[in-house]
Image (cartoon, rainbow over all chains, first blue to last red; front, side, top):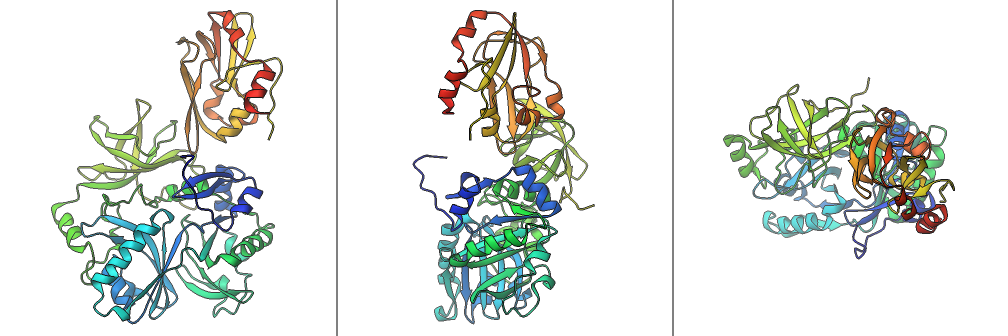
Length: 377
Length: 128
C-alpha cells in the first residue's frame, strides 16, 4: 500500500478498528482483511455464518420507461427476464467485448433497476454508463441514472445460519424475509428507513445482502452480530471473502475479468444473451466465438502438497509448454488444498487434464477441474 | 499487542531467533513475526546439507494472502529441518519459540552471534 494513497472509509470503519481488524487498502478503500483469522472466518461462513461489510461497493439507480430497453442494450444478460423483485448476474462490456465490470442487476419496480457494482470500478462504470445512456437512448427523458454509491452502504450475511437470523428482521415487507428465494429482492424498513434485502451472495452459501442508507448500516451491523451470536455468526473480512469465492470459482474483476478478458473467455457465456437483440460488445464476442476463443479461464486443484498458487504464477502443460498465468489462487481452508483459476491460451483444457504451476522457479503438478471446486456434501 | 521475547535467545533484525548450543544453532521466527504474518498455510524449508551465508534468504512462509522470506541469521550448514511444519504450519503461530522451530545449523562462525540483538535490543526494535 502506498503511504501517500488516501483511502476511503466505509461507515463501519470505527467498528472494524474496535474489533481489532487487520486493515488493508482495497480498490481505494481501507477495509478489514480479517478479524479473528481468514481460515476461521472462512470456515465459519461454511458452517454457521459470517457478516461482511460490503459498503465500499457501488450502487446505481436506472429508472424510467426506457430503463429496461437501455439496460438490455448496455449489459450482456437480459433484463426482460427479470420480474419485479428479482435480480440477475450480468456484465457490462465495451465495443471490443472486453469487460468493464461484472455486477448484479435488480429490478425493484417495473421501470426501476438497481445495479450493484465493484468498488474498484465505481468511477469507470459510472462514466461508461452515462456515456452509454447518451448514445443508446433516443429519448433522453425516458431514462434517468443516479449514482447512489456515496449514500448507500451494504452488508452481506452468508452461511447456513443467515436465513434464521436475517429472517427475524421485520419492517413492512411483503413477503417474510426468511421465505425469500434465491435472487429475490424486496424493500423492507429498518425503524422506518427503507432498506433493500436480497438473497444473493459471493460465497456459495445461502445468505442475504442488505443495501441501506449509511445512516442505518451501523445499527443493522450491530443487530445482526447480536442476534447472530447464538448461531455463531461472526464478522468476516475480505480475506475470507476471497478464499470463499475462489473455491467456488467465482470471478473477481481485475483477475478473471478485465478489458482484456471477455465474458466468453471467462467462461461466463451463460450470462450473455446473444438472442435478445443488439448490445454493446455483441458483435465482437460473436466474431470471437466464430474464430474460436484464443484463451479461456479454467479452475485447477494442486495435486499434492505445495505452496499456494497465486495470481501471476506461470502455468504450463505437462510437456512444459507455457499456457498462461494463474489469475487467482489460494490454499483452500475448506479443501485443505491449493487451488485457483487461470487463463490459458490454445486448445481448451478439459477437467481431468494435468497442468503445472510454477511456484518460485519450481513446477508443481495440478489438475484442471470443474467449478465449483467446493461443493456441499 | 505485546509479544513474548525470551531472554535466553538472540535475534536478527529480520525477526528470526537463534538458540546457540555448542556449535549448533536452532532457528525460528519470533512471536512478533508470526503475529504479523497471521496464520501460516505453508512453510518451505531449506534442504538438509545446504550451506547458508548470514543474511541469505533460506526459507519461505506463506499465509493466505502473502509469501515472506526467512533469512539465515548466521552462516552454517543446515543439519536438520522441522519436517512437522509441512503438515502443521500453524505450529509456527502457536509455538514460535518451541515446536515452531525451522531448522538447525552447524555454525561456521560463532563470532556472528555478537552481531545479533539480545532480547532487549529486539524488544526496542519491535517497540514492545
